[in-house]
Length: 261
Image 1: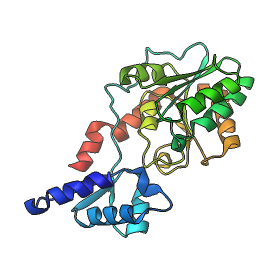
Image 2: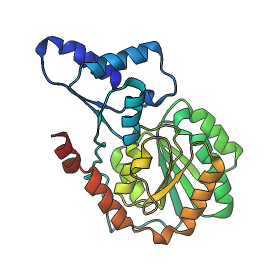
Image 3: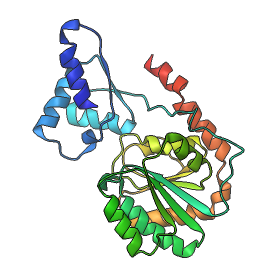
Image 4: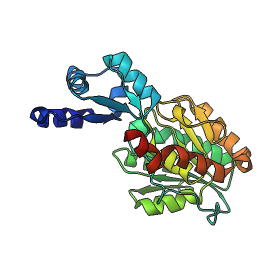
């Protein structure tokens, strides 16, 4: 992140070492940055030899806001944990999974509200949310007020192996995030062969397409519900093995490391 790069540049100033920084701070995506944030980023960018941006959108933001060129190299997906397993089959009911910190930026409240409407159409649907944060109590109250306590689970923080096992047995991944510089949670789901519903929030536009998911505008609740209904209706048309293979080809450790090297 910008702050870590700033500290590294200061610490290594006398060493005269070439420095490559990877920018993936969602702060840089904000419409307005404080003077401190601008100064920190400008100092870091001007004192490194190369800036790596984890999405084309972030690459463009760095150029527009700071007038620095960067190279697009995506994040890595852990294929040993989040890999396709043909032996894993989706459960008998329709399972949706979401992963993210329980903060306003991830818009879990919007997802839960639209899931309640989706549940009224698809009676056997369930929603499992992994992540923790300050919005938990508000989300628990929302779930209770919508009378969907039996269909929505807030798992909190879980080992990655449990998350991966859940994803492999799910039908869809949905995250209505308001801002992402990349969106590792999306590619972890795709790596398991799970189609995703993502927002046009900066990162997912680089890798979500009609073959592996659906993109909707940020904060568009109606579009989110329509996407959930469309994905359910077309659930048998997604080639999970192909989705996983394409994701592995683009975001495997080998593929990304070769670009960094």
